[in-house]
Length: 252
Image (cartoon, rainbow, N blue to C red; front, side, top):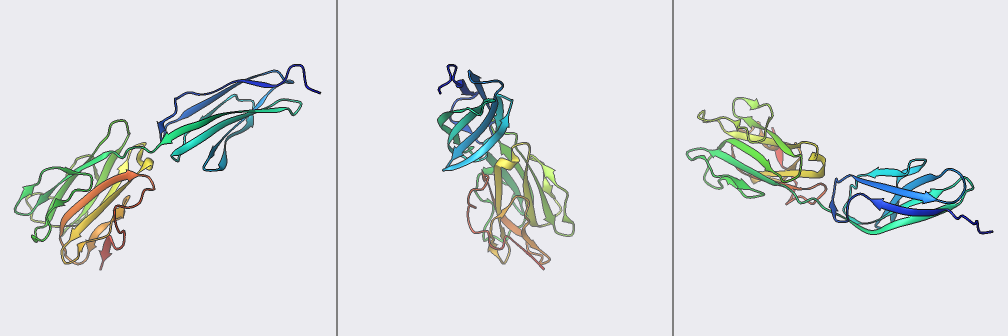
């Protein structure tokens, strides 16, 4: 028997238009009528053929959802009344885009040269094949809408690992003729978990080493080898490394 007042979802909305970037919080809202008694609302999404629950059945007609993968989503709500009647409504082709990686800028203080000009996003700072040591480095992120910073520390001749500094501060030394031997770099801020930072160093007697990531040391320890050059890149979380990650760091 068809009820004279069937359970109906009158509206199902998402508070932001399609095309949002990863990490954007979305609020889903449903309005139902008809049926019998109180309603229960269940929210879920489909992505790449997989269905994932956003919020189990409850009396709450809204759900908050922060996508963690880029792709084309189907967002759905299912409403259940007290007689066990259910009805479903979906929003299809809701696109979530990758965040564009912010720019990372850096400059190094090179033996006999001093501070070089700032470079960015994977360019080489320092030198290759000139036997000149790096003595200090400054690193900064340039972002539009992201809450993202950078912190870093260097391993300095006769000193060892220095403490972390952040967001453009000097790590290493000036005027002391002390070589950098290794470096570690991490992202900071609320959006740090949306990106990976990769960095690769050119070390004396070794050449370009593997790419290190997210706080791993890069360079050497215990050999007395100077760093001569460095490249740094930020990529969306989980992206492929810019190159080989074999042997970013060797220790004696």
